[in-house]
Length: 311
Image 1 (cartoon, rainbow, N blue to C red):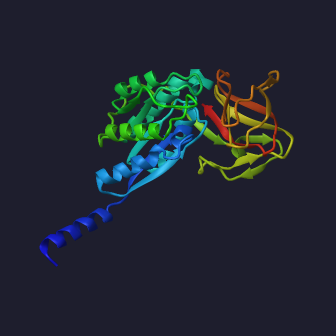
Image 2 (cartoon, rainbow, N blue to C red):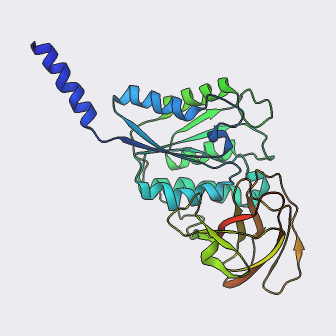
Image 3 (cartoon, one colour):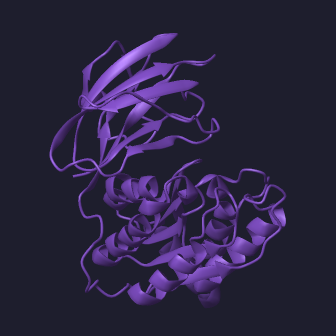
């Protein structure tokens, strides 16, 4: 074997011997590729492998219907414990359903990544999924936290929310152009939502018939709950100002009422079936509370994965 062939062989062996480069993708149904057949995630993975000459292992945490608070909790409880080398974040598309929580949740995502000193890229785009307006917020926070932002002001979106295949190619190119190996500087400002937590439904339940089911997300935190057919009443304990519930895709209720402690019952306006986060109370008094839900199932059984809290 010639000297050049030997050098090429050893170079190839050294590349394959490297551990995989770990990339966590956090996002909504846009990251999941709704409305497209060629989504940006595998395109970014292929581009990184070509650039790094190294295997890329991706953790696809796309969550259709996720508010930025849910994305924050996935980052905190699932993505960071995986110890990624890079985090790519697409968020804000559904924040119009709870606008008061949008900016603090997005900033807490930036703050958490910066505090962990992990390279990251955020996607900023103009869309009309839920009357949100988060592009300017993401761009500003990227500058303030020293984290790159791939900014896409215009895209083809037949439903005003989800990009076409060409749009996903545009996203992939913008993300790849924005990725750097630089770690963000440690944050110097206080975190806006430092106590945000997810609690598995089975851990928070106090009363009500249910079967425990394996979690779809937050897999180390405990089981979700599946309701029997028809009507069910569940009671949970929660702590802090936020009473919020997270259902499973395809297993949302067709009717819902709730009350906090002994307050009067309130009827919830049911959102489209792909919307899984219901922020019922955002200004409860500090301390311990009870949340009681009255739910009515449709064709599929109701599955509640858990509660989102701001302790």
